[in-house]
Image (cartoon, rainbow, N blue to C red; front, top):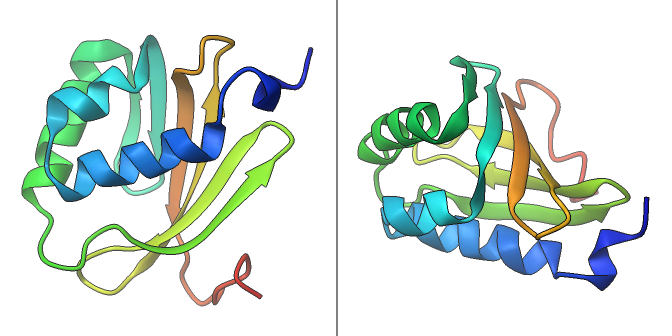
Length: 122
């Protein structure tokens, strides 16, 4: 497989993702995902496809408060991008983004960093 970073800017897509989350812009957020994308949430289960992602993100975005989606670290990886961010309650999460060849998010996995510190920022 070729290096997809030559085709699109994966970090810029993650920044757009953060912006859509902070502004509670569900249509903009969903536009970043492939129609068949998967979200694996360590605290909520697995969500596949546009309808499931819409339901998942509707609830997540309604539950946020001031300070949600504060960036701790954004690190490009061979297979995508790793993001650490702080939720409105102060808990830090690690999310890994994987992209398809068109630059759409194909999969995200997200888990809270409990007792792990800021491993990426170190």
